[in-house]
Length: 399
Image: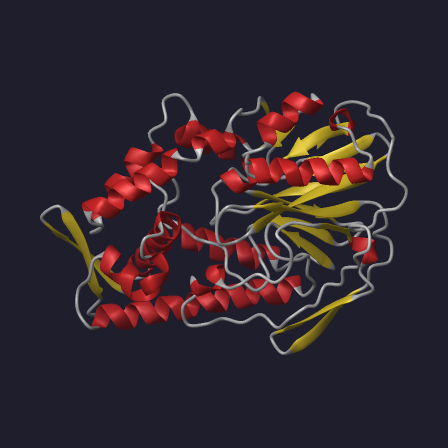
């Protein structure tokens, strides 16, 4: 199956593809670090402006130290195809990466960001400077359904008249979250209650979930694309690759000709993607994620374009580092359970501590990630689930 861009568009474009006037950007690659508390990585200060943009050709070269090996990405041949747009977010990650890809018919936008006034201002500034009109956008592609990637898709569609491509499974999830008959908030808070979360925190999580409805409105009319399809973006053929674990139905896109990967949130530099137990989704999302990392590590990737932080080299090494991070997290949780039975919420508090206090956004992801690791330990025979009244406890396996 091949999905070409759907219609023609103006070729108008500002000369050159430079970052803001008077500013030159250079990616400074750092060795990936794995503190014992993986969630702390999400709260680390992000160096750089709240939003900005750069064309990958403008990098004079990029390198990162990964697993002790120096990796290098050469920028030749990237000119005028992929531009990174940092779209501001109202939480600790600060921005999400959108990518705009130019071809002879106009532009494809990948993951336009969350629907907020700040995000729209960032886009308006970028499009104005580059001389791009919304009707010049002929295709909108979504790697997955999380609101920081999906939220502006409907508004962009209205302004551009462009199709929105997303996997069927990802779209079904959006309707559970934000559709008219949405049930996700009740399902998730019921799950959290079963695993020991107190009523006050449950109420905060429910209100936080509902607050995203306006940030994904209007929602798009979508065209389904599935793993194995070829999508034309930037004059290149990109193969859609299934990438579960972080988000059910997530797709990453691989351009073999260049060795480029639009990797969504599946493989991120410096920070670890959140892996969550989601009601009604995979029973063991961490297993899905680890298997996906193993498969993705087999691709020859010269440069990866992630959903957060900067484009990076050393993709294969990064998949291995992420797998090693989760192995350490699993070992730490197993040691915690060896001290005595505990609820998921008690484990979450011990793992993430002050970082989740009073922050419903962080609490939701920390709790879901803790449960993902506990479920994985249970599936591997390293932990045992015990029902005590209405509450679930986990203890270390005696075998």
